[in-house]
Amino acid sequence: MFENLSDRLQAVFAKLTGRGVLSEADVDAAMREVRMALLEADVNLKTVKEFVARVRERAVGQDVMKSLTPGQMVVKIVLDELTALMGGAESRLVYSGRLPAVIMLVGLQGSGKTTAAAKLARLLQSQGKSPLLVACDVYRPAAIDQLEALGAQLDVPVYRGEGDDPVAIARAGVKEAVARMRDIVIVDTAGRLHIDQEMMAEASAIKAAVKPDQVLMVIDAMTGQDAVNAAAAFAGAVDFDGVIITKLDGDARGGAALSVRSVTGKPIKFVGVGEKLDALEVFHPERMAQRILGMGDVVTLIEKAQENLDAELTATMEARMRQGVFTLDDFLTQLQQVRKMGSLSDIMKMIPGAGKLPKDAELDEGALTRTEAIIRSMTPIERAKPSIINGHRRERIANGAGVAVFEVNQLLKQFAQTQKMIKQMQAMEKQGKKRGKRRFGGMPGLPGPF
Image: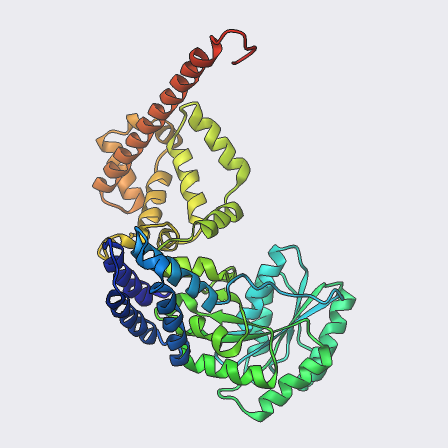
């Protein structure tokens, strides 16, 4: 996401941060490039003008011009303004306190409402909620079947009702949630290929019937400013509370995400970052701004690790490594833990400075799969004692994994280096403990370890 914009902005600021002094002309030249980068990213023209004006006004101030690092100050200003442009802070779902809470999704056909409804159900499910999906799209062929199939994958019930009156189905769906003791209802409404009065009237009627706690507009990032225009039209007719942006992972421009808040005044609540049902994330403006500027997103990376990694298993692995024990089975376990966090490219984008790697230094996503295949092709004894793997065994392992022998050699070499590093760290830790005892243990007049 935002790849082109990120590249352009980082190139602009690389020129600024290398200078000890910035003139007003330098700032103006940089702002022209920023303006072009935002327009190429399909950001709303009015939004671009206001953004650049705010940044320039702050960037030509005395605090920046007299700073020892004026380039860094300008980057900080852009970070602040980008964050503010996208909402400033995380916007959470707001519930009225009644049960069940009701969330209603609206949007144009093809924006991904049905899939977004299932993803939202999965996200709420992970937070301890018990959602019920209500299928009110009675016009699109197989829409209800699609929602039921997605619900089955999540073990979330789907209410499809009877007849073809979406208002009656929505009202009955809320009653069904009460009967099933579900605490959240997600209403998937119908969309059209374009905005029309009939669609707006139907959405307003459903809203009046079920009185939702939150109305969320689903927009497709791939449609750029068309999505923002649609959101503006819905804001006037239905008055929604927030936005879900889908397919943000497939949009290199990202103009919709940068424009929707300033055009509609509505916050972005969630973003879809993949096709899987767990690929819906809470939107954090500051973290997104940091990623656009190539600063990484360490907080999200940590959260992903906490969510996906087995804490007990991680503690066990750490204890083994402290004892100097590390086998290929341990290596395989760590590999499987990392894969739970997503693709290597997604992980790298969250690491500060990773964006400065050469463009041709592409990550081989298949390397993890091949490594796992190589280890699984070994016997238990070979995994525990790789030193016994001779030429004949290497050839057998390579054939079993469907790789070349040199790849097996490469893995064994890397593993040997890792084992060596772990032993060095263990030795350093032991030496540190001994030095600590000598340093603090002999101090007179202080008890215990002092």
